[in-house]
Length: 353
Ligand code: ADP
Ligand code: MG
Image (cartoon, rainbow, N blue to C red; front, side):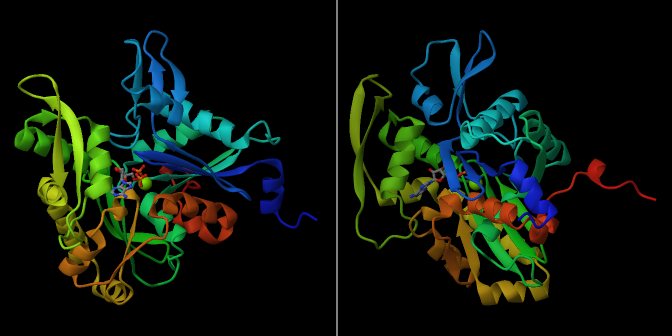
């Protein structure tokens, strides 16, 4: 028996949640859970302008393509640096998520976007998703989606602080009553730490390493607070003088030194948001603690150092890399309940009387 308008809509179209991350794109299919989890990379043939591969296939091509095929990360600099490519990517994801199992109408989608995105950028994401054959597009800010994914009581009159650290950006937000009370969006996240490591290795060891190597070593031995025992690993790069390959051993203290400046900036950002938080909301946050999500939340010692500087408890989301996507899924499955957390574009509001 179909009981409500919501259920009728659901009968004729798929409900899909998309986390358009700068590093990883995840897709949630109603009733199934997360069905796609791929790097946000697209390979484009520059001669024809066509997309030749998306996600893991495109990442595999990185650095291995003939000259006219380039692999790009369409979301890395700002929300939507390349409109057409983003549209093709969304189309690809929607088709892949439905897998020949299409319904009568295009899917209804909820897309997560970084906080602090401009109206123009929100519109671009909305249009890209519309052009990709969807029947309805709803947009939610990522820290809000992350908070919902972590099952925080975002609709209640109670302050919830979330820090989502992804590849390109870190979102710091305080949420209450279904809205973002104050927030800050920093360009300091996983990619910046990788670049810090590349610079450090170049100046300290005089070798050149690639981004992938830097990321691997960060994940393998990175630790923001010393004391967990010596962690070390060797890395291979190109000697800047001889031009030949050379191997060096790096320790956790090298990584700490390399990324310390960025970590300080991140902590400053957290403090700034706390300083602008209204007192009542701040007292909730002090009582409830701070919640971390995104891949960056996994760096050893980050939660501890934020706790030390803010004097608050810091919790890491279970499975931080999927929190935003799980949040979009929870919104889809409870659309009526969460309708107020969605971003509404000016021109979609009913005309003023
Ligand atoms: P986005 O939402 O921007 O796509 P993600 O939340 O998927 O980003 O996080 C990706 C980032 O998390 C990458 O920069 C990656 O290096 C980093 N990351 C993933 N796992 C770890 C880990 N165990 N330690 C440190 N950084 C990690
Ligand atoms: Mg993210």
